[in-house]
Amino acid sequence: MAKISVIGAGVGGMSAAARLAKQGHAVTIYENSDRTGGKCRTEWFGDYGFDTGPSLLTLPAVYRDLFLKTGKRIEHILDITPVDPAFNYHFADGKSVVFPNLSNPKTYLEIEKSFGKIASQGWEKIINRSERMWEASRESFVESELSSIWPLLKRRDLFSQVKQIAPFTSLRKLSNKLDLDPHLKMIIDRYATYTGSDPRSAPAVLLTIAFVESTFGAWHIKGGIGQLSVALEQRCRELGVEFKFNTLVTKILTSGKSVTGLQTQNGETILSDLVVANADAEYVFNQLLDKKVSAAKSERRKLKAATKSLAGFSLLLGLDNSKGKPVNIEHHNVYFPKDYDAEFDQIFTKKIPVSDPTIYICAPKDPSMVKSSNKEAWFVLVNAPRHDVEGGWDWRSGGDEYAKLIINKLDKLGLNVSSRLEVMQFRTPFDLESYAMAPGGSIYGTSSNSAASAFLRARNRSKVKGLFCVGGSAHPGGGLPLVGISAEIVAKAIGKA
Image (cartoon, rainbow, N blue to C red; front, side):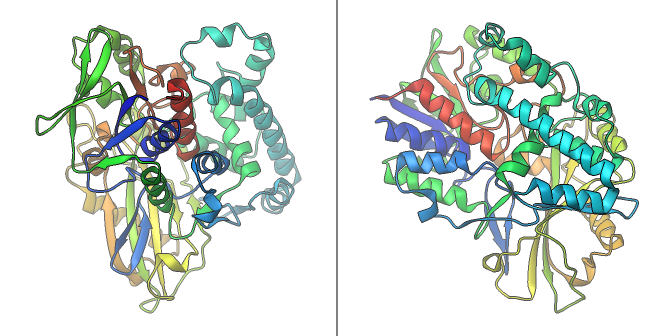
């Protein structure tokens, strides 16, 4: 039995802790804040409950597997329901298209209604190609511990896999090659933002998102996606995992090339056999580990070479329909701008807030997230540049003005926000950096803005012996499904007691 210290009570940290405790290890989680969840929380302001991080669950099988293998099935704990339609996409030319949940034939029909038969046939080709990409990458890459590129190069099916994945083709180039309808190209471009990336440089393999969303569906958890964090905390406690809240870890202690434990802000030394870091990899290797730890040098070089992911500016809007005319929108809604490329230029090149951003609105049809039937709780998210005082945008001020700009745009879209607005909170990249210890407020750590980006993420098994990395900035990447998979990879790498 190993004594394991986990840094961070986010979804990745708790998922790993539950699996490791089930495997017979003694696990303690050290959390900087006073609660679990990290970025995945449901927070209440007055009569309104908001998911302040992930607002959508895909690939629920990842968490079904975790709960099944550590105790009671997830269905006995959480009410997980499919969201139909999965998305409603709106475009600047006035056109829109609905993507039904869990039904490609229905999606093809909706695309045909909106953009014509040729566009529908084009999307069918996209789904077929993305399925082949998923099958080629799932087992060998996504679900495997990616310690180096060499095991991939030794595979017998390497040539066929490379042909399907197209590692040296960008997402944008692939959609251009497939001659898609311009509206559908924008939807594909948006998949790059799922990893905090620019579609003009992100790898084509991100097209797999189209297959994953359409095949495995879009799901909601009653009470908010943050209930997943609540359930994970409960499962951890059932398995004997200890939680230490309001405990900031300031150092990962080492001797030679191996970890020996942690040091906290109050000077306490915690001896540990193993450390699992559910914190941003940049923070782990550049701040928690001593610069003299030679085994961490390669990770530092990789992180320095990687482009940091984009950040997000979010609004939590509590709307009282008794004050103004309500608007009927779906659970998940995306409003694209006229010029999508301008958004990526402003984020990655100019590093300024987007003047005409793509707007994502999550408007849950969940009565348990409001305290009155005439109220709605909207989570609104736009992409934004990282908080960077020296070489980018300083988000310590100006958030209120940017919030007004977005609300004004929502009103112009006919969503009648201002007249119904009762509660308004906003979160800047600086806020995310402050409470989630995410440098710059980057949502996903590093972006996927190159063919080599996957190999620039932190390894699950660090070269520092006894140090493991889990979460969105580690392999295989960000988003709830991949974070859950990273926890499984770490648990398998450590093994049973």
